[in-house]
Length: 380
Image (cartoon, rainbow, N blue to C red; front, side, top):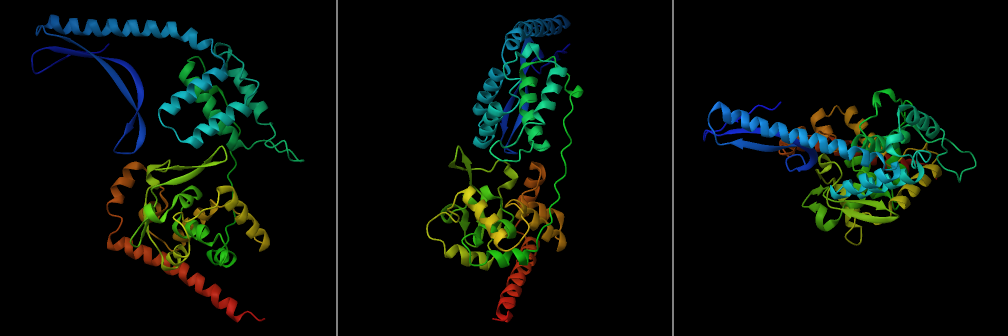
């Protein structure tokens, strides 16, 4: 039971928990859960006033709990599909990423189809576990001759939506009783920076590949870079991203993770490539086209496939090889918690950061010069 506290005025005030809602935190740039309270006061400064405030709070809490009990059967009559629709609408109000909403719609359409017509009140741990076991065997792509089941990682993402919906609208599921397949760790043999530079040099994807490998930008960040908004003097800032939603390019002002909003000094060679670009956008091809050209380029040069996103991992490996201090390496790649990011961001362009930039630039420039000299000495 809530306890009343005496105010400077002599009155008593008692707070009763009402609900929790997601609010935008200006300091961190993220949504956070905030507990909301109702306030009940009594102007009687005596102990009797304290009891009056506490009684009012207790009555409110009792009425609220009774109302919630009445609402639960209403939620229980919802099918899982209806509950997912309601959940998606609530996420739209909170301005969730268009790509996140698109993935929710995709999950509703293709995943856990045996569950979608179930009413929430009829779902239990056994039914959900059986559905997970069935979903783990669902083919990932029916158009291919050899049908492989969806990955454990994809199943985990699908279950993430279903469990979030059940957490919100159903209170009778013991989620600790439910097991998911183990997500296997993906091991990739990364090529050297010199090898990547060799195969992309002079191609139409040289700039986007170097932006990813050299400056640790993701594909959406690379596609969001413009001359008008991203470049200021000798620095390149990630302040917009471009993602594909329904096969259409959508430009967003902020990356999904606020720690990814970062600024890097532009290496001279990348500045040279940028100067060759006509128009405002540094990379004007679609994400699918960029990825396909990257894969085709690897095939043409007999290189084992790595994804475009793996170029960020290559950047991290290079920084580890050069023994760049963690705080600079993590800041460059945007791999920071909000608290640490804010602490470091204001110190980013100190003399030490300039030294770090120079070390990284020198490494890639040396790799480029080595490949150029190798081409010159290569017999005709």
